[in-house]
Structure formats: structure tokens, C-alpha cells
Length: 469
Image 1 (cartoon, rainbow, N blue to C red):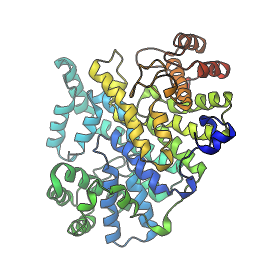
Image 2 (cartoon, one colour):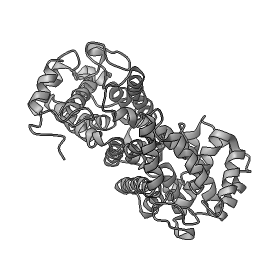
Image 3 (tube, helix red, strand yellow):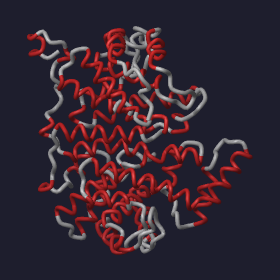
């Protein structure tokens, strides 16, 4: 408890947050930190979006873009993968197995090469499935591959463009993200646009993305070789020339090193176009990333929003101040951000999870804390949001906290999370009526759920079907 709160007799959970003032935060700082969540959902090594931003901004500077255009390019690069969670469930449905691995490996494929595509499908369709099931899956992918690929890309691009538009970005960023997978020769997706008709930001972002992927697995020679090979097919030849030019600079490749990467990338934002955020914009960012989280599975649609709604109602019932409720709501919106790193093959599995799968699910709590700790203003919130699977009886995870070791804010998020999990539809069952859900939770009073928070939930519970469309 801080000294002022202690002297006033105010409980810790009612005291103002000690997080850094929002007014000192740049938008780039928050987006750069949260981009690690986007790396998770694409199955990419941590820092992929940041590295792509470093590469793409070097290209943008070398071709003489002005400050306004560089600012738009900067956020296109950092946010290029905002729609990627939206096709995860469908990808798992089509291929089976771990869709994170499928996404990661597809980044290495030249989709204009039938030989590479065929090899990819053979390696990734239905791993571990019975031969008959795998053959059916292979036939579907081969027969309908073009149509299915367009569907997957369109879903991702449309969703990503919608999210960045709701975040307040202009047409240059929105169109840059929507057209990310268009190719110079017109054989890309989702619309088959070609040449200079493809937004410049899209052309740079695609090149930067591929360059980072191949540099990560094979070094700078592999990255440059892919850029040369795809010049005129995937990539704008002039941008390839620009990339190969800047790649010979003394600090280009060393700039991709993880140590200090965030700071270097933040330093690339044009100072004159730097955006300071306010409380409302911070709320909008939390809402947007909650949508990214919930889009990963058909069974979690709206989950984070409902948990935030229930947590805020419980907090109000317990007398929490308005500023603290706003702070808590952000934690509730982002409590499952770590699930972006869990395969849909596990999240959407209709049967019981085996031990290895359960361990993978439990890791999402630590992922949540690691990601949120990167955001300066979420520093205090990170352990609170990440602890939502801890239990008063000490049998929860990830740290097996017990009793009052679990802060009240966490206990509020936990009761809201459990309530929504029971009342929403899941792969293995339908939704449970509210009255029955509360009765089930009562059996877990002070073992899985905090009694004080449960009583408050009972007083404010939405008597209906909260998870219904």
C-alpha cells in the first residue's frame, strides 16, 4: 500500500494506480510492445513485427518518403498482422494439427510455385490422422485450394483493416494492411491487384516480412536471395533494389538484434508525427486487442468483452472507484492475450485434453504477463491479469498462489472469467443457464472462486443468456 493511501485508510485495491501517466506515453510504445502478441498468433519468433518494421522503414527512408508517409508506413508494419487470429480456427479446421506451425512454415513457401505448394500440403495436412481421414483432407485442399486460400487471406486482411480503422488510423494504413498479400505480378490475394495499383505500404510490408522470415532461419544471405528471386513476381523490383542497397549498410543487420530492438524501432517513428495517447485511446487499444484475442476461436467470440463487463459490474458493486474500474477493465479485456500463442487444435478440441495439451494451455497465463509487462502503463496490471487462473485453495496456475496472495482485482477477473466460461458455448458442451452456473460456482466458493466476489456477482448477474448473439 502506498503511504498516502495508508494514511487515508484506503485499501490497496481502491487506491489510484501507480502506473506511469498515460499522458507521457507514445502510441508507438504501446503498439510496439503489443506487437509481440501478434507474433504469437502467427507462430513467429518474438520480435518479428518489430524486425519487419526496422527493415521496412529503412526501405521507406531510402526511397525518400516524407514524414507523413513514413508515419503511415511505420504503423502499417507494426500492425500488419492484426487480422491474423481471425483465420486461425478455419486454418486448423482445414489442415488439422498445430495451425501456428502451419502458419509459420507457410511463410517459407512461394505460393506461386505449384511444387512448393504441393509439398507444403503433403507435409501439413492431417498430421497424425488416420490415412482415410488424411486423404479426404488432402483431396479437399487440392480440389479447392485456390478458393480456400483466397478465403483465408481475405478474412485476415479484412479483419486487420477493420481493426486498424477502429483504432483511428487513416486510409494509408488501412489499405496497406488490407493488401498485404498482393503480389507485384497480380497473382497475390485477396483481389489479385498488380503493380503500382498495390498500395506502396503493402509492397514494402510484404518484402520486409519475407526478408525477416528468411533472415531469421537462414541469415542475411538467405534473405537477400529470396528478395532477388521474387523481384518482379512477388515484389516491386525498385523496392528490391532499395532493400539490397540499404542491406549493405553497416548497421542494417545488427539493428535486428533483439537487445534494444524496441527502442531502435521506436526511434524510427518520425518525431514530428509522434502521437501521445490519452485514456480514451488506451481504452480503444485494449478493446481492439480483446477483439484480436477473441477472434482466434469461434468459441471465444465476445469472451473478453463479456469478462470485462462482468468484472466492471462486480467491481462497482464492491465500491471500487471509477478510475480503478477503468484500469481493471483493461486488464479484463487483455487477460487472455497469451492464448494467441496456443494452438486452436488445443483450444477448440472437443474432447478431454491430454497432459501435454493442458500444459500448453497453462502457459498462456505466463504469456499474458510477459506481453503486458512490455507495456509501461500496464506494468502493475500484468501480474493481476495473468493470475486469473489462480485459486484461493492454492491449486491454480501459473504460480499456485493461495488466499490473500491473490489480489482482489484478480479475484474479480477470475469470477467474471469463470462465469462467462460456464454460461458460454464451448466445443464440448452448450451454454449453461445463469442460475445453474451460479449454483455450480457456489460449490467452489473459496476454493476456486472468492466468496466476496461471488456474492457481488450474484447481485449483478445478467439474468438471461449472456453469451447469446
